Length: 371
Image (cartoon, rainbow, N blue to C red; front, side, top):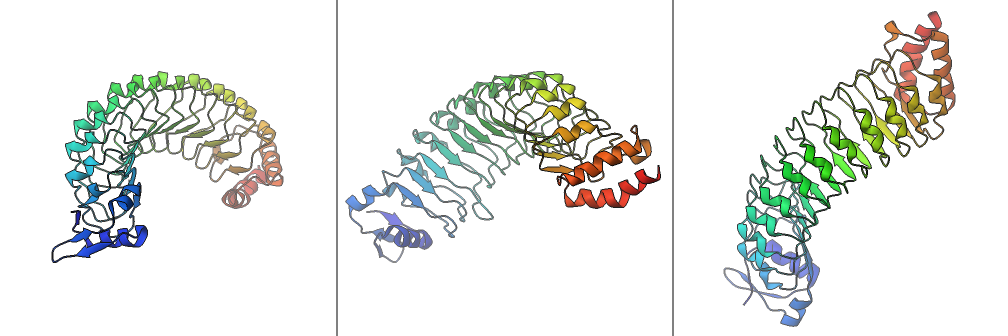
């Protein structure tokens, strides 16, 4: 006899999977045939208001279980009997409120994706390290202060999302995740990174925004497969010239740091398409930057530019240039007429965004014309 205690869960199963139930005084009994039950390999009941999922072990052949955005506060132990489960999605938006995972999680040997984002989990059981087939682990927006060392046994992991937790440091064992391709550490309390991060040779996306980083380990520039590096809202003061190693980089986001200059070696980032430098302290750009032949999007808002090399006109693929409040007009190192000429040619190329145009026409052009 298969017993279910949550009426809303039963309604989802009836509506989406045409299962039949018999209602009793205290629960619902499933009356559909075993053959029908065996055929169900995926259950998606998201955006309902389910509180309990008792009876879930009825579906022995289940491979995908999506219960995101419900009102689940605790998982029944029987969920860990779903030995064929490959995807478990418990992601929350204002609903699921999981605070812990039972240690029986290790029974899900075939699990490839585990999404626990937007819950209230404070600690992971060490048994999570036994999910050796896991490829995607999402722990975003929880209350984790540290990670169990066993997590580094997940050798097949390709994507690890730790966005918006309370991590103050990463253990050096992170370097053991040799197949990792995406790592998101947004919004934690990291002040430094372990040098072992350079062992993540397959890493393509590294997001470190909204932390407290003042510098990056030199070996981070050895991550030669990086395509996206997001570092905004930290306290970084300089970039190493070894940045030239990142020849596959397509996006470099450095907004809201304390960078005063860019290394000339940036010219080697031939595949770079987007460069965000908003709200730094940059006074001068290296001429080599204009060799970024694939650059499409360049943000220089809120800097302290004292000059703008004419080579900027050589960026043939540039689609958008943001210069809003980018200049320190009182300390220009460039002939005003020359700068004015460059800016007007940029306007003719139709690459300046609306805010930049207004700023230039109201503040910059009049100032330069008077000089």
